[in-house]
Length: 404
Image 1 (cartoon, rainbow, N blue to C red):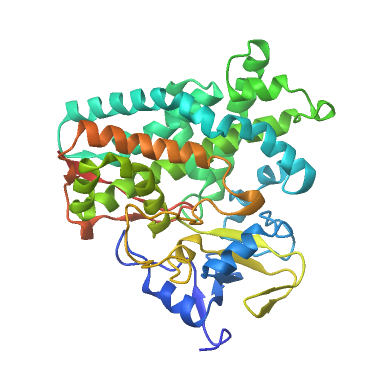
Image 2: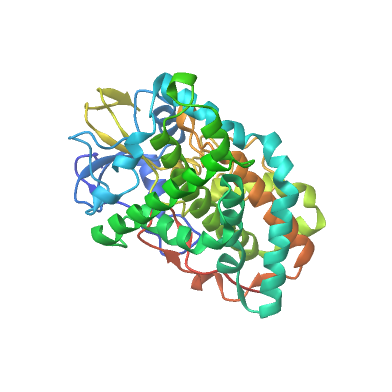
């Protein structure tokens, strides 16, 4: 099969909610640099092998900004999409400025800080489980725990009132949209979100608190090595979206993966010291992580012996790469004690996920609290009945029905 003969439609769908499309293994084996058609109708190149995905993600020349005139549009309503909106262009994408932005914001996402807020996370998880138990089984683990927990935590970090979280859920949804909302809905939601954050920052200027946005304001403007007002505002919006939707969905998927074969859950109950490696393994095996990371190639590049011309848009499928037998022994199997586990769920290189310590901590805390509080937890429907959410840049399950 030559790369030119077959143009796949992307994203590649899978019948089962937790399993990868069979096509991934076929592409890794026979066509690791494949031509695909995106939801917009534009063409892109799909990478599915571990070494290739890692090479492109780690190369600082390849940008995530898809607003070049010859870049592929991801979806038909692309003006509003997260990857190529004017909003994304406000945050520095490369070089010194990008490093400075990461340093300023990254101070809030160190493992040390995460350990400090761990008890708060555990308390929030406990309270949410109390409410779920009060309502009675079956519950929806995604709606009752997966979704509210990361929002509460990120609202806490940004000094945003938690009672506004419903609005954030909607704004996040529209910003991560690929096909679900109209351009008018997306534009209206962005305008509301923007106005909300402007008002919130003005309040922080008047009365600073112990939170990330207050600290970014205190760091001064670009002349003092800080960010300008617009960059602070967009940083707040980006963190709310990124810190909420991805982890919210991952909580539901992680618990479903562990309950799909209940011997895994039993093993964790018997040995909670496996929680950390289990979280990494569910991140690696997440077959429904969403769109993958698009990268724009501003110059001709060679990947796996294939020359990609300047102006190519590449989609890096970290989820497919994470199942590459050449990088992971018994890659298709879930090994709760797998270590080391150099998966690419958080990307790689200069653009690797800034919030990965936060996501890891939230996932670990959720498991700790669930194992302690609801040891008899099980799925309330057969695994085959779990349904994926379609049309978002981030993959998730529609609901995660559980009983205990």
